[in-house]
Length: 407
Image: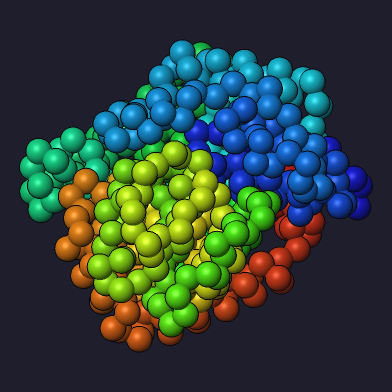
């Protein structure tokens, strides 16, 4: 097997995309030459770690701009932005001359990889696959606040195909400019347009149907910051119900104060990762907070994990056999939590109308119903097995073979 030059490009609007690319590049770094390129915002968390080279000369929009578009229900990128993305991609591909480009939510590679005739592998959660059958909950966009959940959901079900079509226009317009075929009006085709697609999920939790040979599951691509445990670690009172709380880089950090107060009222202890956000969480003696924690260790000592419902933290929690409460606001988080509720390992709350009573009810429901923990232990064993049994080197070779056969 030839040693390949692999270029990993991580759209850096959230930490999750960078973390998954870092995990994959590091895992492949012992047998291939791997380089991760990302924006500057999260790079400091990865410097000096892993078996891959790291550079930050990637053009990305600011995470705050990305989150604002998400919460407004608007297209995440306009044509001018995607043009800058393609130009940035092209410079990187020309500079590093990769044999394969691997991207995580870098939709511009749909154009730039093809312009450079480089095989392109995309990493994206299976619930975004055209071959999945999720339930599309109304995300926390303005219509949800104006009309409420029930009426808003009915309207969303009617207009979602039209809304998805609107989100495809910027990339389709750019593809037309470069003489590439139109991807149609289904947003999932935009997100999954690549020579091959890898799902960092369990097929038993998020199944797909009639998928091509170029689509496959690789299991969780997990990462956590390399930070020491804080001085207060394990100094909380013995016998307390412990909750690991983090809203990550894409959740609403303003909810943390309400969450820890509710946990305290229920007689529990909160260990909190603020994801680097500086917050006053009040004077609760049952709250222990730092900017970053090694998430797997935090989940391991917790009885329950409360997060934004995104796949990285929920997978981390479940790998430790712990159920989750996901306080979601964007569609990606709602899609993930839909499947986790179906698996009986967690509960979904809505960010825009969550309150102490709803948080308390969800916490008590999970504490008082043993099936949540039993299911989480079962799913966690499957997640750990998928990671331990994974051979990304063999998967890469199989993927490249499937690409060649599909051409």
